Length: 164
Image (cartoon, rainbow, N blue to C red; front, side):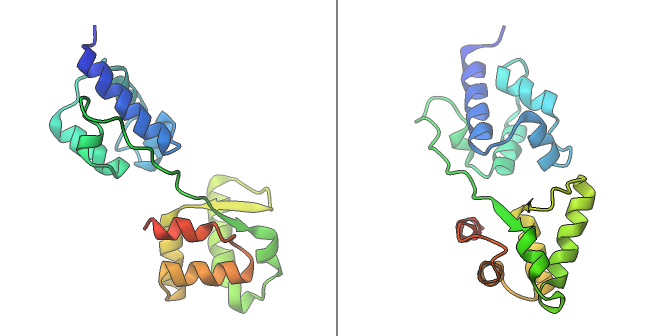
């Protein structure tokens, strides 16, 4: 039977995870298997004790201070969801290859890996934008502005770059 403290700790872990828009399986995917869905779920239910080391690592994974996870303090501060980086594939297909070729190849690779061929839009991660910035030899914010000017990202993408 989980203690009240374990239940409170688990509730805070769940709140942080859901504020970030992650399912338990999403945590496992995002962590590339480092955090198994079944283990995180058992922490959240209070069925499994979490060591201080594991709690610190989990806080680091979520990008929050450990104090946000510990019961007894203030409730977790609401986190704004990270804005989505959504590439307009239809607009991308209209751009000259000399300008948008690297982005088009990168997007095609992601589509192939995901088996996602809707052809209209493609969500990318902040890490993808960082990689593209290296390819284009620009900072992520410069590249975001360029993609916005091309019409392949909307202006909301600026908020995603501000959270880097």
